[in-house]
Length: 143
Image 1 (tube, rainbow, N blue to C red):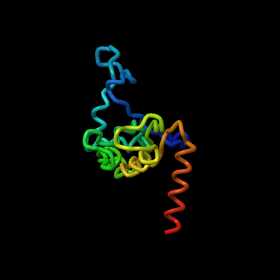
Image 2 (cartoon, rainbow, N blue to C red):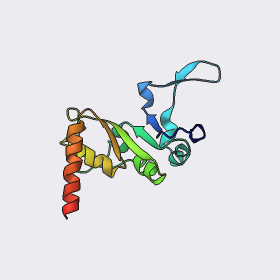
Image 3 (tube, helix red, strand yellow):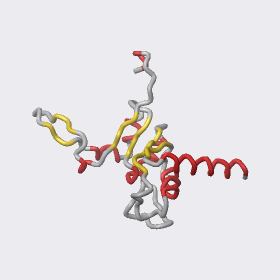
Image 4 (cartoon, rainbow, N blue to C red):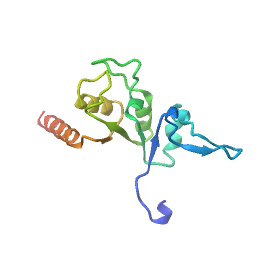
């Protein structure tokens, strides 16, 4: 895009295969479900970084949900590998009324996702997220 004098950040939106969000044509011309499994391979983020500025996975992709429990949250490798490859990680959709089992509040989830590599969020509750990060920055700057 720079050759066209277009300088917009580009993110790769990642879904789960079973959502059947994205269809592509196979070699026979049939429409089939896109297979996102390659994205979770160790060298995928390096390849993705050649084309985009960041990834946008569903937030549970950044947490090992099987190993995580309340107050013991285990990041998955996705966000960490993305950040090591120089990619931004903007995750979706953070909701205070649909929390996973391993957190007790939206702010706990935001903190867990930052720890898992996220540096941007899609949320239906931006007021809570903004206030949380303002408060955290005040705490950090005063210590």
